[in-house]
Length: 314
Image (cartoon, rainbow, N blue to C red; front, top):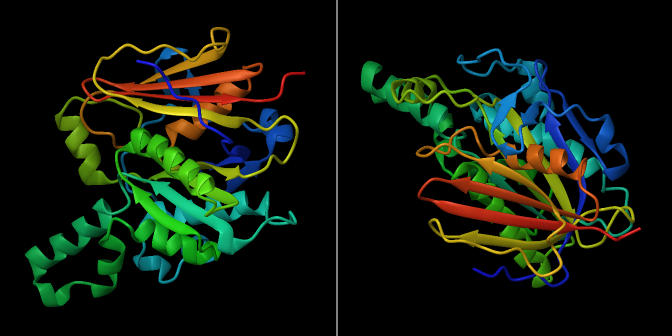
């Protein structure tokens, strides 16, 4: 299968993530990438592991002051994934908001998460079934909607171009990159936040354990800011983003044979705890690549996303 190149793809202006154990958010432009300690290690053959290998299977613990500092309305009733995405997004926007071309009305938001609604819905349903529906906290209901994570975070960021939520983990985040490109191509955005956010949820961990699925349980948010123009001459530009069905073969575009390629192989079945992997993988890739970088994200029976970036040759 041939891969179609994109015209005038957006640039990655900054990358960031939340850090454990305090969930502080860090974000940096290209010049400071090397100073960021990536929490995930990639082996280049598709595998990955958390550098802090301690298993975390208890629900995410966020202090009330931290939740309030996120700016999310009714933070105690919001998903922890939403709080983490808001904390990160504010740091990401800070890397570009001082630019003359920044405008919240021209900034879009896309968040991919497989865990944002499960803990909320589980808590509501469990209380209702055990104690009666009059005992439930109705303030939880708005946060149980799949799109709540972007509705609530875009209000924090004061952005108004678009706000869209994606499921499907890492595949959803790759789809978010495609959506962001279309927003730029149709002149609807000048900047776009793309974030993957996951939280530890006991019932999902129990389900994975029952399936003997020992994937790393990622607890945090990572993301990037795409811009219509670069922040620096070295900013990476989105060159292509292709979704290849099944096990179909593909060829990189002409002139890309020397690109640095990173494989990311996801376990079959659930995509939970994979959304933040893409920004982590891109940071890893950009630190090692020259002028061209390709992320190949695959999943058994689900196909492959091939995402390519390039920057000016020196």
